[in-house]
Length: 221
Image (cartoon, rainbow, N blue to C red):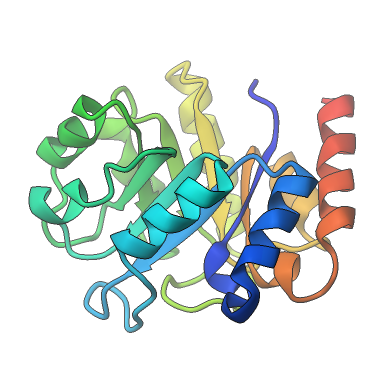
């Protein structure tokens, strides 16, 4: 089983003091920076695009975990085939989702993830389980930072873990949305091993406590 890793969502950071935030992430030794890319189409919000993603990734040097909450095409996805970006995740529900998009991402030497929204059945990932490197279970409706985790999504995490075990897939099971100190242990116990943490990481001065808890959980695995 892979070690538990942390991916702070940069969308929840203080953009006025972004350099300071990035220096702090480097100091804390986070595993990834999570980039929430929104287009006001697939989700009712806009975040930022490839230019800012590229600048953050270049300055930080921290591996990037790009989460595309956009309608999909080869042209759009190609803009995120950037240096220091390790993972590119696309939504099963997005317009344009296809195996061709997955193959394109992999052909650019990136790991590819498939994400499902809270109402999407976990069985949707099964046809792609052998070709993706990560499954992302959204624990809130995508589009906005600071939401509370939807309790029913915890059982979905467990079900996806059962699917990964059934198919003998030792890949990351990522969770995104409302992750905080109160539910990290439950999510890990349910099978999650890549934790996207936004507001709880940047806004509540809990970053050290979160990192210490994850280190502890890795020791007792």
